[in-house]
Amino acid sequence: MEIASQNSFVLTDYTDRGYFEQSWRFMIDNYSKFAIATWGSLLAHELAYFIISFPAFIFQFIPAMQKLKIQQDKPETWANQWKCLKLIIFSHLFIQLPMISTVFTYTEITGTPYDYESIPPWYKLLFKSLLCLLIEDCWHYFFHRILHHGSFYKYIHKVHHNFQAPFGLAAEYAHPIETIILGGGFFIGIVIFCDHLIFMWLWMCLRVIEAVDAHTGYNHWQPLHLLPYYGGAHFHDFHHKIFVGNFSSTFTYWDKLFGTDHQYRKFCEESKKKE
Ligand SMILES: [Zn+2]
Ligand SMILES: [Zn+2]
Image (cartoon, rainbow, N blue to C red; front, side, top):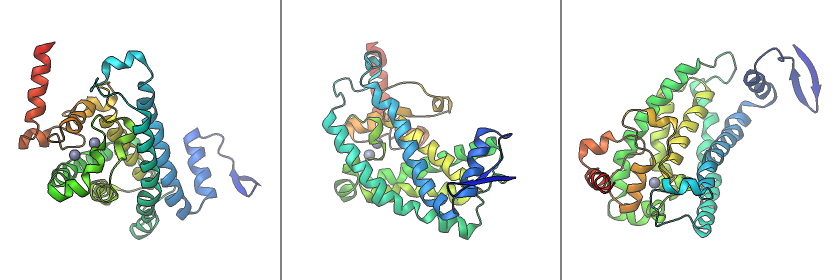
């Protein structure tokens, strides 16, 4: 039941529903599909990226976290973090926003619903998001390996390797062409599994959580570590440290299968002996 139209917003009485349902229905009642798909998706990505990166940013000021810092000899610097933030903002506005602006057209063509009633159960959303992680990881492994060859590395991927000791905000620090190439692995999951706008946003959040975790530079636990063969910060940090091997984004099995983790395994064995 519509109870009021105030400040040009439609206010419908959903007070007997949960906070999430009220918020989602308010969004659907008051914004066009174009605005939700474009500006809503941009906002969802910005909030996810900066909120998820924030704890990793704070770690550098917490003395107790320093023992978990992976590359102890390379602390975060303000100069690096500022340099990173500038490119991230540029990339989000001028590379990712144009990519995000295709969401409306895509959902119109495929008939992807936005309404509250069509939201799939949370366990289906989670299960399909985890399948997307597997697909993205496969795409990332092979294209990341290609990006380490000759001119691809020199002119494109070298940008991402600017920080030998990564930090959370650096997860999306990359050349625009790399953002587009590796972004392909993200969109495959959407093409296969997307049955509601909320799936796109959830899968995007999961991918951001994974990418930021891989770049925190701190070997701390978080729930994704429950996944079998999950790599995490320790695995990807080594890739930044030695510029080779450990090409996967999320899991360790592609590197294990192709032997591109042999230096990492040797390093882990030697570290264990020293303990
Ligand atoms: Zn990286
Ligand atoms: Zn690389």
